[in-house]
Amino acid sequence: MLRAADYRERARASLSGNWGMAVLVCFVGALLGGIQSVIPVTANYQYGEGMSVQIFGINMSLNQLPAEMLGILAVMMSILSIYALAQFVIGGVVELGMCAYFSKRALGENADIKDEFAYFQYFGKALGLRIVTSIFIFLWTMLFIIPGFIATYRYAMAPYIMAEHPEMGIMEAIEASKQMMDGNKWSLFCLDFSFIGWMILSACTFGIGDLFLNPYTHMATAHFYLNLSRGSSGNFNSDGMM
Image (cartoon, rainbow, N blue to C red; front, side):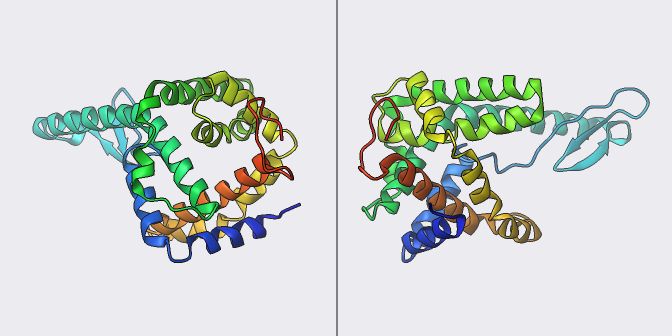
């Protein structure tokens, strides 16, 4: 059985000589929602005497702002909200392209940024996959945080599966991911956790380190997917079984 260190080693080998393109793919993917939003904006309103809003982690008292600033703030929040919605809508199909790019690189095949935009003919299916998995994860999280956390890993391979088999339906890809991750969720969690040191280091650079961390983690995950999907036979069928 492969360990987290093995996947990281394979990722570094696949990225050798290809870092520049991988960084570009992840940067564009982050801007378009293929990765978690790159704009750390939260809006937490507190009403009453101390009405405030939190932006970029900074609490701002609305009562202390002049009317002109309140107008500018309202416009900014509207723009960011629209951008976040656009990221969610577009991000599903971009995510499929990113999965295809990193899977091809992991297999030693030629790949470039064009692969990131190769799935727009499946736009509706990609968006549906993102919506359905988000709903499932949300519902499990409502039960308790741990079931939601487990659900995140249960459906983690669905985008990779759909990227490789775009003819599959949304629920087929989700079911295939559930079967593939049966007994493997802990392994993927350990792989993700093995990057914790790099994540802390990236946070110290105010996220600049993510330019290199994102390609590293995505390539390792692609190798994880390929190891599960190929198995000893090298084949993957529509039932998600190896």
